[in-house]
Length: 431
Image 1 (cartoon, helix red, strand yellow):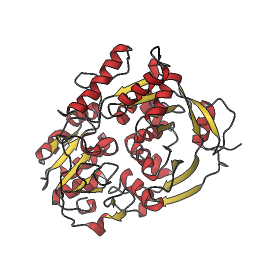
Image 2 (cartoon, rainbow, N blue to C red):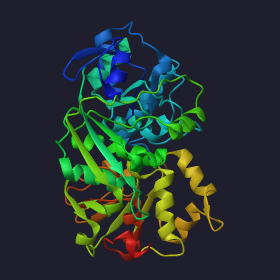
Image 3 (cartoon, helix red, strand yellow):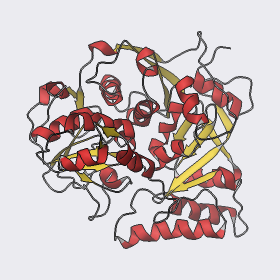
């Protein structure tokens, strides 16, 4: 029978010849990821339910990244990291990347890719809704709650329902003023935040396959903002080159069959699209940048698993080079690898980091930082009555800090252009 790429991967994982949407199946999990927010409760549930002799099903397949609330003096946040540290020591976990050491990597979703855990054709679960980011590698990847994660930790298996798939085809040549963030905001505006509940979002078309891996990760990262179970892009030569540079693990590439069934199919011509924002307080509150141009800002933020990748900073640096920001602007690399690349990558002989500093930006340490609000001493955190434009993925009330703040979501190009004027600005004004 004809199947989508998601169905084929789940069929392989469940050791079945085929699967159909709505079927419940047992999956063999290839990787389980957790972090400092959900790791401690997952561990506690696992110990309680599996008893004093509890064993991790496969220590090589468990990956732990402290990344959310780490650069803070908050005692509760510090305690969470200490719990992970003690757990990793007790069970001699090789894949624990401790903050404060050379092994620290930064935001889990980017680190999974950089450290070679994203393997085409495999199944990855994480205790974070944006685990769907890894679907950019032609794999099935989704977030689960702490109880499900504890079950995986003890058994390596999980009971899941096969999702229906929705296909999004982006064709045409992407204009220089658009990024993947504009594409996914268009999708969210089209189908809303519950338009793909428990579905697989499959991204296809020449506009998608012209994107770098970084940019593809932006698309799959925000699949969850439509209520989707996962986002996925078929692996191609770009994917293979990235994967082979980071691991020698074997992999299998799957493609959707031509006769595969989809719940819906949306088609876009990227050459006719324009820069977008999501207005407060929802990722689907879509508008064009032109329509909200001139909205006064108190802060600009470029970072997170969605907008803190090297490609995002390259976009921003093009506009900030030789200019000065007019409002506080935060640069938060998603990983320590990206932070190093900000010092290595140059424009006209000047590093990206120096370009940002010369422009008056505040360059922070790699972490989730203000994307999830965090303790009061979190860098870039929103305070009362602030109006912020950000490359992050959510703008619900209180998401970046104070519930009395307003957050606009946009591409790194739009955020950089806005930083230069102090109000929301279309990047086409600078390109």
